[in-house]
Image (cartoon, rainbow, N blue to C red):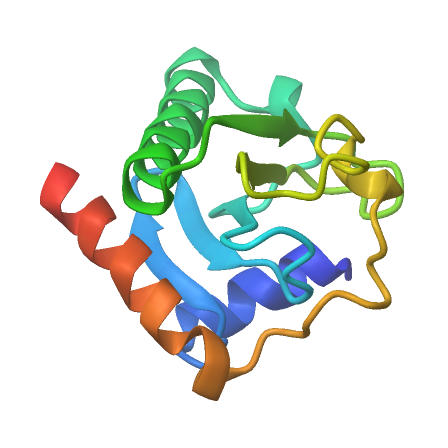
Length: 145
């Protein structure tokens, strides 16, 4: 069972603290390491191996939810743009990473791809620190539905 399967199961049970909202294609969660403020993942429910395992309607919904989440992050966090990534190499299950990019980032890292940033030094998700951010993103998602 992949980490994606475990996260989705915890979201379904209401037991995953970084869970932001359920969307038609699955779940939005905050990244367990906030390498960039507002870093989120979109997890499909049910979990599938990759984007091509979804039929046309499901694929369209997943990609539409991903774009909607990008819109929310731009509007709510004042991001200049979003870096989107889907790999599935380490965790062989479909999931999309969304990294809000900000003008306030240090110049040295502003153009660096997110996986080259210092993940070990990034703050871990903590309810006391990130709950307000999670609620803000969740509210914006719910207003769009």
